[in-house]
Image (tube, rainbow, N blue to C red; front, side):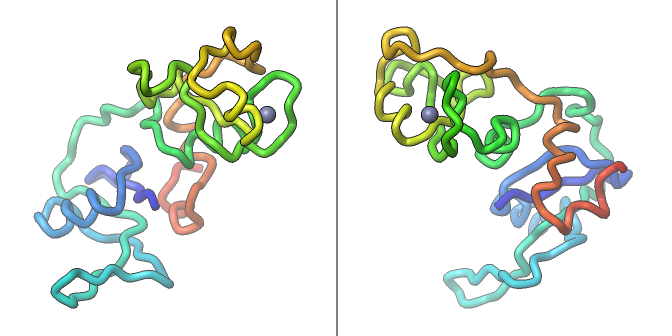
Length: 164
Ligand SMILES: [Zn+2]
């Protein structure tokens, strides 16, 4: 699950992992603004921590994400590709993340190199190139604007902290 990170000014900065959020809170860098209503985290020592949903930095950082590219996450990719297989002509559910240049050939997990595919097309492509598998995409994969990803409001508890 992802956590919304706010600047000291309460402006949304980026989305981070819950593990990173907990480290920031424990190191005194962040305060916890929203926590999950139905989840907690138990450490191996048996202590319980609230599961973070929204955290805020105590010290202002430059808004490096403003107007910039959104960080790649699985849920943001699902939003960009509208949960649909990106192979032209296919309307199936995009249940798998496909690397256009396969990871075994050095392909990275980036916006430009990943698309959602249905199981069938993912298997058909395998470790071949798109052209090699005879597949074309509906549109070239690009990084969405950070604001567009935030607007998908991945978590209901984020809504209050996002610009309207
Ligand atoms: Zn498909």
